[in-house]
Every structure is written in structure tokens, then in C-alpha cells.
Image (spheres, one colour):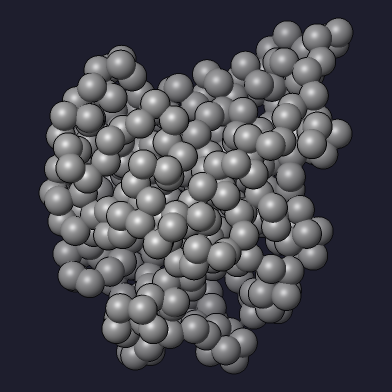
Length: 339
């Protein structure tokens, strides 16, 4: 499926909720939350984009690299490139069912698998968000990563963990950044103490699963996550949807990666091109999560639309590797960056 057709269909189906702008930078949709925009002024959404745009890659053309490889291994997963589809849900209130919850989760989970990537699925109120994610993962024989919200009622975490484990998945996650919404919207989420997080990580490990903690924005929290046994963290400001004064992921990523050098560090926020993936890797990430572009792909073409978006990222990443003299994604480091 051609990207031109995917974007055209998505623009038609998302009328009133997303403009499918030529440059997805958060300006046109600022404050549209629920929706696709960043919270209030949209400043932290826009910061994700501007921070990556301010970083340039060092172009090198006198080298011996002829073939490039985007393949990698993350958390025991063999992936075609270091990309996970971010956990996004709530199609009824975020995109007014331009693609309902079930077809959306089918599209991202199956589309990712077909391209050698892996999709994360979400958790929210209403219950259908979590349920449909689990169903899609189970249909793909456990190939997916269900995320669980930081429920204030710890029994809800336990119940969701049991259901997630039943899908056959090997990894689960928690987007701790959503704890902020409790104060704003009355949702029953809460932050975690180190002791609480350690107990939940242990429950995950007792089931033979790995645990990702998403929403880390400072080295202090990264070290606590490591001490608590988390297998990976995601440096993320939740797509600019939790606090307008939050820093961009790219801004804080180097200090966080340096603080936990033996830990798997993932990052998201503002990744729109293959060159952005390479920038995040060079800043210290082992892999990235990408959200909005895959939502548009799913709406514009379901699983085939997701595959088209993945193929575009892969082509651009290969191009960026060749033009920086990197034979593989494992060669990415700070030496290829110009600020």
C-alpha cells in the first residue's frame, strides 16, 4: 500500500480530530486532549519535535559501508529494526472511532508482526482498551506487549497482570507517567514508591515475564527503576500529554542513558523519520517507541497501512545509516551527531 494512499484515507477518516498535517509537530492540534494533540499549550509535544530537529547528523560519504543493517535484539526479541509501536488506546474519545478499538489493535499488532516489529497495547477506562489489546496479542500467539496503567487500587494491577500473562506474551509494561492524570481528571491512577514498584516487578518476574517502565524523565527515577528490577525503561513525556512544562525526551535522554549504562533504555517523542530513530540511538537509546504515525497508518489502511509506515521508517533509517557511515544500528553513538 502506498503512503500517499494511506495518508489520503486517514485524512478523510480523521476529519475533525486530526488534520494529518504534512509536518506532525503539535501546532495545529495544541490543546486538543482528548484527541491527538498535546496538553494545554501543546508545548511539550512541540518540544519533542523541535529538540530532534535541532540535532543534525554528521554526513560522511568517504567510507567502506555498502550494506546496512537495521536488525537488532531487544529484551530477547529479534526485530527488523529497533522500533516498537507505542501503547495507544481510547479510539472512541481520541479519534472518535475513525477506527474502532478492536480493528485498531488488530492493525497495529498484526501489522507490526508482519514487518518484524512489535506493538505495545494500552490500558484505560473504558475496559475495552485493555481487553481488545489482550485479544489481539493472543490472536498473534503472544506477540505483543500489553501495558498496564498505574492503578491506585493495586488489586487491579494484579488482575490485569494475570490476564496479560494468559496471552502468552513475554513482556509487560506500565506507563507510570499516566499517574499525573489522577489529579487532572479524577482517574484512579497513582504514582509508585520504590517499595510498591519493586513488589509489582517481582510479581511480573515470578510469572517469567520482563517488565518495562514507561515515563522516565530524570536520572534519579531511572536509577530507582533499575534498583527495583525493571528490565527496561522508556524515556517519555507521554507524547506531550501529561505536563506542558515537561522536557522533551531527546533533551534528557543522554543523562538518563549515562545513569543506567547496563539497562535497556528506550525512548519516544517526536519521532517522525528514520533519521530521528538514528538520532535517538546516538543519544543513548537502545530502541524507540513510535505512536502517532502508526495511528495514522492504521486509520488509513489498517494492517497494510501500519506496514506502509514501518516500511517508510525502515527505508529512511537505511538511508541515514549509509549517509553517516554506519554499517548497522549498533554503530550509532554520539560521534555521528552535530548539535
